Image 1 (cartoon, rainbow, N blue to C red):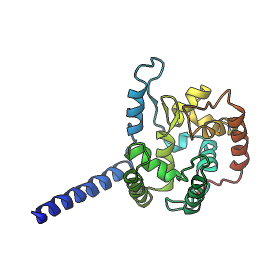
Image 2 (cartoon, one colour; image 1 turned 30 degrees about the vertical axis):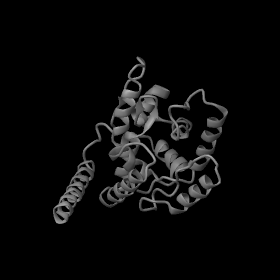
Image 3 (tube, one colour; image 1 turned 45 degrees about the vertical axis):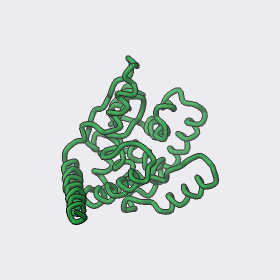
Length: 224
């Protein structure tokens, strides 16, 4: 009986590994059509008539380098050099949270991509473990350009707004390829909470973040 149970769980684990590697390899080339967050948000906003699901995939070359630099400056300064995890940032976040200050995750762009594309939202240990697993896979099987491309096409950038092209249209009525430094910084500044904050007509807090991001962007070199 014990052997049967063991074999059963081993089969489940094996199938999970096979399917997860297959899905990561698939999305190495195929655009991600929809994410778990998009689905959950859609039903969350079901009763709000003006909120739908805006998501237009575009290749990385059609996304302004300004936005690429802005998200690196704002979200993950070591994105181009780390291998999926920024342990210094994670340790600082741990110390910060332990002191009871505002919760900070210390997640890299790679971790956020893994979470958004393959997993559900939440803070359970199981999800965090799976996030680490999928982060390892995409860092192994994707290039940094692909991670950035998927990230900028998948993340939430407003209420019902997902990806750079939809965000550029929503906030600035223009394409993602033509975002200025200030506009790109405006989108990057709201990423921690794009439902609460606005990229235009921003609060003083977001405006200060925009200005800081613009200053930091000059130090970002896009050397994929």
